[in-house]
Image 1 (cartoon, rainbow, N blue to C red):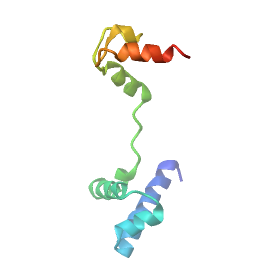
Image 2 (cartoon, rainbow, N blue to C red; image 1 turned 45 degrees about the vertical axis):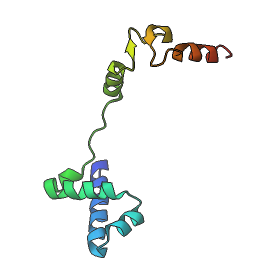
Image 3 (cartoon, helix red, strand yellow; image 1 turned 60 degrees about the vertical axis):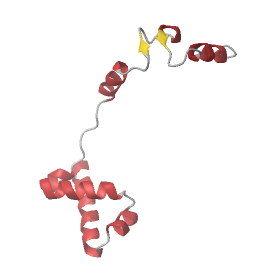
Image 4 (cartoon, rainbow, N blue to C red; image 1 turned 120 degrees about the horizontal axis):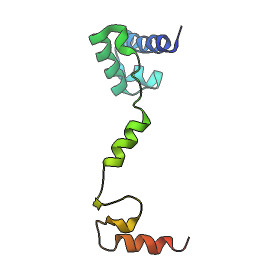
Length: 103
């Protein structure tokens, strides 16, 4: 039994237990999962069967870092130093630089 099959089996067992006892919250507490996860799994199981219970591939960290790199606060010309970024408050950079001078 591979990793995906074990995960499918675990989720099916949780879904079946909740149906058996008729109480989703108790089943979720017993297995230590959130109800939002339970309902997401139940919906995926109804739509796609067992295949819907396979864990999705995680988003690569490189993609997230690329998206964060393009996000900005204020008007940056370069992210290399605080003096090149237009601060949200006039004393923002000065305050940070004075605070860091003690280190």
